Image 1 (cartoon, rainbow, N blue to C red):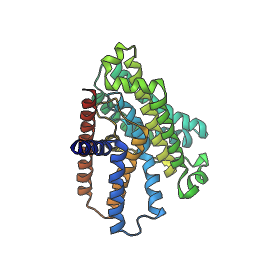
Image 2 (cartoon, rainbow, N blue to C red; image 1 turned 30 degrees about the vertical axis):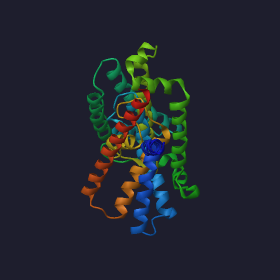
Image 3 (spheres, rainbow, N blue to C red; image 1 turned 90 degrees about the vertical axis):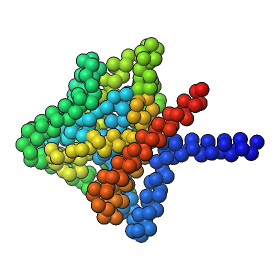
Image 4 (cartoon, rainbow, N blue to C red; image 1 turned 60 degrees about the vertical axis):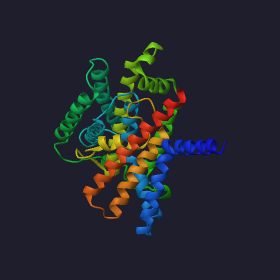
Amino acid sequence: MRLKERSDRSGLGLKLLLTPEIGILIPILILCVVTTILKPNFLTWRYISSILVGSVFIGAATMGESLVIMSGEIDLSVGMNGCLAGVMCGLAASSWGLGLVPCVLICLLSGAVVGAINGLCVCYLGLSSWITTLATQFICQGLAVTISDGEPQSIASLGLSEFTRAKPLGLSWLFFIFVVMIILLDVLIRRTRYGYSLRSVGGNQEASVMAGINARHVKLAAFILAGVFAAAGGLFDTLNAGAANAAFGNGREFRAIICCAIGGISMSGGAGSAFGIALGVLLFHTLWYCLRILDVNTNLQLVLIGVILVLSVIMDIQRKRLEAKKLV
């Protein structure tokens, strides 16, 4: 009887540890404690607010990437897609003299168009999402540099300096917008028919099609939404800097994929949550910020991030094994 109780307790402990949200919170807490010991002033609002606001820029791209991964595909263009969208916003403001609303719409539309191209190539032409999105990544990067002529595109004409400088509770308005986006993403994933279809297609596409779900439409919508979220990240970059720059977003797609893995998004598709995404982004940016504060060698930083990615994938595999045992 006692052995059974111990087994149940150990099984429950392992289950809790492998729960994405719990598994992410533990290393965040450990990291904060270690950094606080080495840097006693770390747990001050100055540093905490910097981590929270800094998470916004990679967070928007991660939200888009998560939808594509949950559908069973991958998007390597989210970084440069956002960069191109930001450049389009800057161009609309500085060269075309358009106002705030048209500039924002052009930015988001640019991201949606690139996402739609990715989705059409993958879903209707049968191309690999890896190859397709890698190609659009280079195309977006080339277009961003060509359109901007390699120069920053100022958005000073939009008159947003007061907005970007304002810091309610010591946080940029961009952070509060990001929180609203996370809530909306949670509603989309957990409370809508599309969210159910997305998880179903990513988990078992053949069974989903047999159940009457149009997998092509679901995946196409995921790519388009990923483009919109990527564009939002580019818009955040532009608003924060006061100008669009073709260098923004470089390498962001890989950081977004890492955040997805850390945040409990199954790399084979079909599982994930908005809360886990938010925590994954927070852990990644906290790690990066703490390593910078502690003056850790840049190469060692890459090693640690790689180790965390591998551990995240291992946790994902273990979660699936536990779920498979339940079904047996």
